[in-house]
Length: 242
Image (tube, rainbow, N blue to C red; front, top):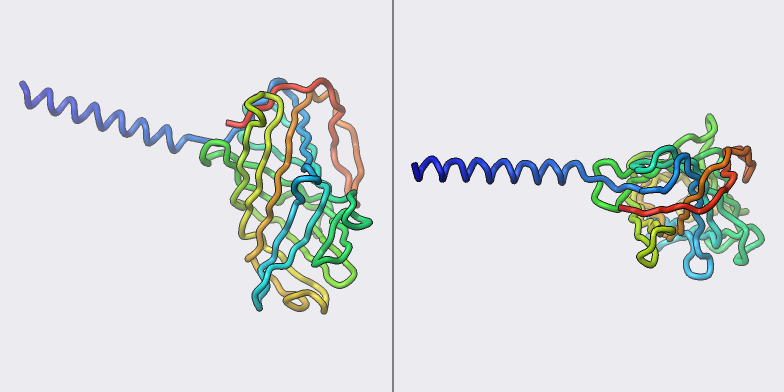
């Protein structure tokens, strides 16, 4: 009888352990919002932190594309989101006439219809992978200066972005990007690694403060050479990252 009790105890322990393992596997980063459909609006704090794309040169050294101002907008359906797609825009700042620089020179960022998709499925809590998707046919993100242009194509599964609830409340989330392995091609004779050099030793950093609003209706917007659906904002609603 004691042997049977021990066997039952071992079996129960195994079942509990299996359940815990399955629960861990099922984890996902999520955005919990207080209305559906919801308009998501994100903006970096340009006085605290720029958005920076850093390239590791083939001869050593790091070369940066910097934007003092960066925003995004997107519309999400559902109240517990494991995935959200947004349209970014960069520019309008004080560090150059365009708000962005590339290797210290004034530069313009053209998204050409490209969007970011944040996916928390299968990730740890508050963690999201990033896809660059939805570019206009034949187009890529371009960061263009007088001496060099960076081309960033569609790509998937970039790791990663981590969310933090601001001030313990339920109205703002900070998304911190430490996103590695971004494929970038350089074109231009004065580019640090020469014309048509392509590499994936590149990373993006920067914080974005995100808020959610009741989406009254979608409106057509145009920015930096592409059209996208913007948010016709209603009242601000709950936004919590888990």
